[in-house]
Amino acid sequence: MEYLEFGAWLTSQLGYKAQKISINAGFTCPNRDGRVGLGGCTYCNNQSFNPDYCKTDKSISQQLCEGREFFRKKYPDMKYLAYFQAYTNTYGEFDDVIRKYKEALSVDDVVGLVIGTRPDCVSGKLLDYLQTLHDKGVFVLVEYGIESVHDKTLVRINRGHDFACTRKAVIETAKRGLPVGGHIILGLPGEDKNDILTTAVKLSELPITILKLHQLQIIKGTRMAVEYATHPEDFMRMTVDEYVDLVCEFIAKSRRDMIFERFVSQSPPDLLAVPGWGLKNYQFVEKIKRRLQTLPDNRVG
Image (cartoon, rainbow, N blue to C red; front, side):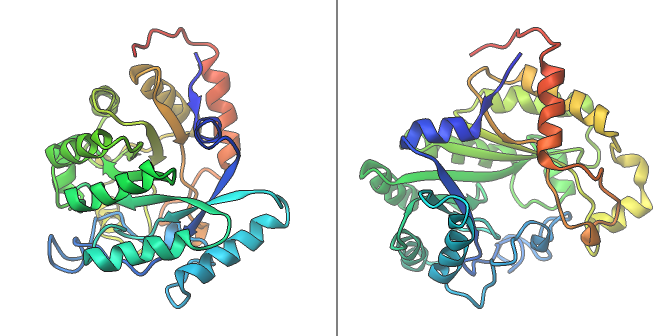
């Protein structure tokens, strides 16, 4: 069995290779400012995935230019996608949000947008605007933090929305011809293997183009770190090989045309309350590919 890889799919969409550049555009989150909740999701610490050049004291253009120069040393002909990554990148006054997207697209060699957001923070008006960009040939990928399809889990992690909200957002986005990405965390408290494989099935019923799978990481200073210290029995603590097997079973339960972008997350070791596995992303990928070669392909779609 094999899976479709994001890099090859992206090249097929654009006709050339492009690199994502992560930026922090100064957005916040409705689960932090009180509109939905306070304190954010129990696992959340944005420091765990933001590159050093993503600082809010730098403009969007400056962040993109610095990222471009970093990659240009090795890939002089590369094009770039502005990856609005930190927090909820559709949350704010419509005109201000659009201004930020336009600033990103004004930077030389930036050919599209990847927009990380929550399913409860997209409006028809905003999706219509993104469709106009798409229709003009600008690459636009909307990436939703789904995390889980199980409402009991979403409540436990203080997510602030249910899966019905996710379903609606994904469908409305896909209706406009936009590719839809989803982010899922494997190993959230209270979930077992059957819950995770059910997640694969339910997501495959939706018009999702791309999935990112990440293992749960327990980050220092989060409420989840306190929860883990108090009730470690509620968490799936997997070895590398157990996690690889779980990911392969997840792929086997997914549609054949589902594109997988990532399988693991790599937070800085000094932020981890529970030590990680000490392997790089490419090492996981090789393990997954080797394991998949031993499995039959009975997927649909």
